Length: 285
Image 1 (cartoon, rainbow, N blue to C red):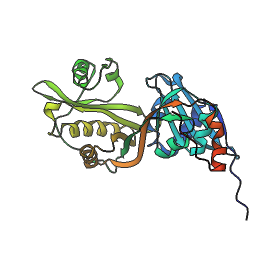
Image 2: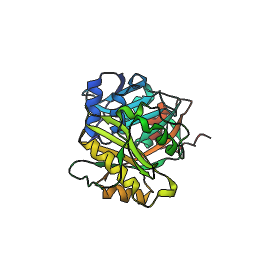
Image 3: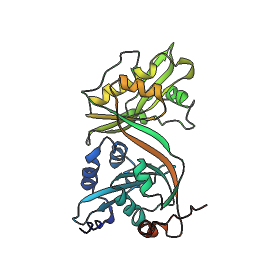
Image 4: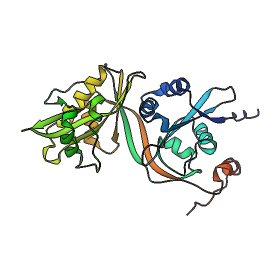
């Protein structure tokens, strides 16, 4: 019996919000950051591409964000579909890939990829969340200097005051000093998803569950607004994973982040030929 023919894929740029959101909603916990970009103030700096099968159904999506450095490139869906989008529609020279190992492997002939950072996407909802009581208090615009003073321990640039107008941030103060804080990377009520981020405790105050307190407080407020809350954690950060698990977060998927530089010389076009002939090609150096 003859093998089934390979499904023909076509890729094109897309801008219709409903079409993009519909595909992202097939796994909104994985696509949480992209759903945030869909309705963010910088949405005009995002470029979207989709791949379709021969029946016209969408099978993959790529999103390139030109407003950040390094420029994020998010991949979702069928690996061959992602390859088709990056081969013909979205073709940045340099990008910061946010995907899975499977999707990274699918575009390895188009980009030279750096060693990945392995992350866990953990998620919580109203059914799993286990609040942790503590000293956390809501932060507002008047707290921006204290917040930046805390984050400057790990980040070079501070936040603008406006970030605390809409985003949810909680902190713990000891004798008036802000020693721990957590906030939000994404809050999209329309799409029902939020992402907790910027969790930090001053080195002198670790080991007192302050990070758990602030993360719990942020999560509780976000779950009053959306059904799904997500966060990323380094896959080798066992203590943090355990702490989030005690709050009711559970692993949803494994992610990789890595820089990539576009290969030259049309390697992407030669990929099917290499596979068909089973040739081992030398790596570019």
